[in-house]
Image 1 (tube, helix red, strand yellow):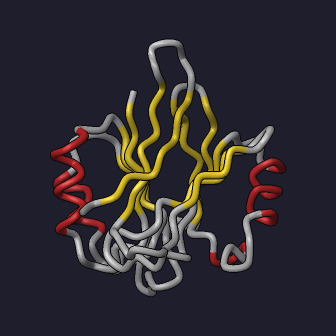
Image 2 (tube, helix red, strand yellow; image 1 turned 135 degrees about the vertical axis):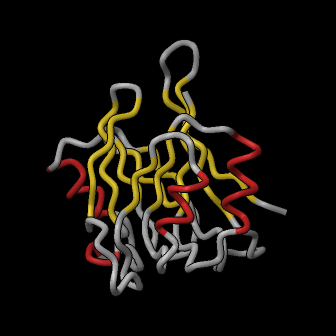
Image 3 (tube, helix red, strand yellow; image 1 turned 90 degrees about the horizontal axis):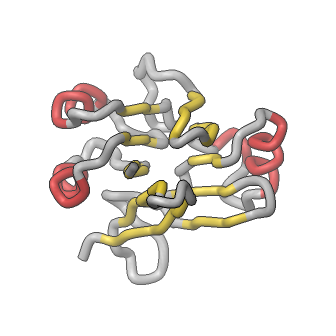
Length: 159
């Protein structure tokens, strides 16, 4: 099973089409700041897609957060700006624990991270459109369940 996690596309969607063709995922998660492209994402995606509202999605009817199940793992998806992710991940990871989530997916910072903790995995896929990390390559996350039922999350880059 494979999921693609993206965030902070800000209405620029060309890279999304590229990664869909590369991976053919079973599930897509968008962590917000879609900026009016909700229909684009649902029209080009044949698998289930979960999207949340980001701080720049002013007129969106998307939910601020959503719970997703992936291979028996509970994933909590939010944009992250209400949980101070610009200064660290401790608050958002604590909130994920409170909600019983094994994985929290968020965006907002445009910087990719995967932090494996004892009880929560924090995943920020970065930005497909406006990356801010060193090297400034557009990024996304790939989450897979291997043939042994183990969960793996990795950051991938578009060069």
